[in-house]
Amino acid sequence: MEKKNLDWSNLGFGYMKTDKRYVSNYAHGAWDEGGLIDDDMIVMSEDAGVLQYSQSVFEGLKAYTTQDGHIVCFRPDLNASRMADSARRLEIPVFPEDRFVDAVVETVRGNAAWVPPYGTGASLYIRPYTFGISPVIGVKPAENYQFRIFTTPVGPYFKGGAKPIRVKISDFDRAAPRGTGNIKAGLNYAMSLHAIVTAHNEGFAENIYLDPATRTKIEETGGANIIFVDRDDNLVVCKSDSILPSITRRSLVYVAEHYLHMNVVEREVYLEEVENENFKECGLCGTAAVISPIGAINDHGKEIVLPSGMDSMGPVMQELYDTLTGIQYGRIEAPEGWIKVIE
Image 1 (cartoon, rainbow, N blue to C red):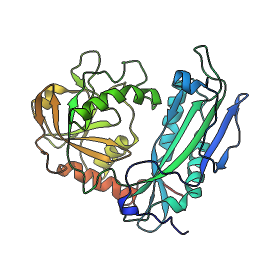
Image 2: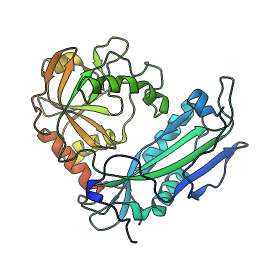
Image 3: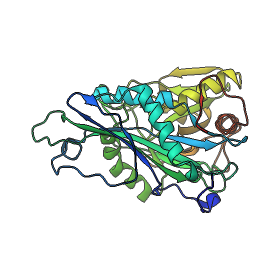
Image 4: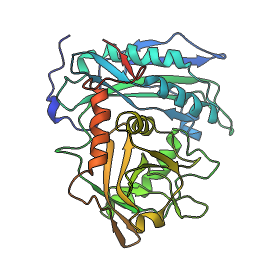
């Protein structure tokens, strides 16, 4: 297939309309058969549930061109499962998980010309989402819903390499202990916008949120999980019931254990441990960047510089990054079931 005439190596991380998107509607207690359409516009009531009460959940994953020329997706079954959990929490009818994966495949195939070539550092970002579309004026779930998937080609999250970032300890709480922090709902990201704009205005790349009960334990950032490497070269993963179960984090844990033969510890992590330099490296992990290294954490004016420094990604994080991206792009053999071949 002939690719679109784009400057693939210089793409930014933003939205670009592609040819096809997938749409399925829920009404009268069932999802219709769904399919690809050309129109990117959505028409709904001014009183739609998503507009009035933010009844919406979403996912994010990518399609890649591998070293041998195939188009693949990375672990879409886990996105399907996580979206089902998110939907249940917001009283949204679950779009069947097998159909979710099939819809992702169909959408990527319909936009194959937009999947960046291997070696450009770019990929096709895939955004599945579900929202309440019927009118709702009383506080209750909508009756009708729409499931959609669109795609957009994106460049690497970093230009010229993954440089360590400066982050700050936020004064805001990200999620309540028994709230919605462990699901991928649009409302969680809306509440983080003021905090991230504030952080950017102060010269920081992101916020680190602490647990709301004691404000002593590290949870996550506005859009990514946090991982550490301690002084004994263990991979330390923050544990909390109110953080999102990141697919990238789970994949990195497996890579650490089975590819790099590291010891992985999932536990509560205290800010005091970071201040006492118990960790050599720290990073954010998620779909967009895989790993974004943290070089310094600012706690209300107190600058905590990680031993890995501000010049480059630490050696352990770099090895984790190289291994996982090697799996995604077909340079390293993947665990069974991780790679969904589309073409």
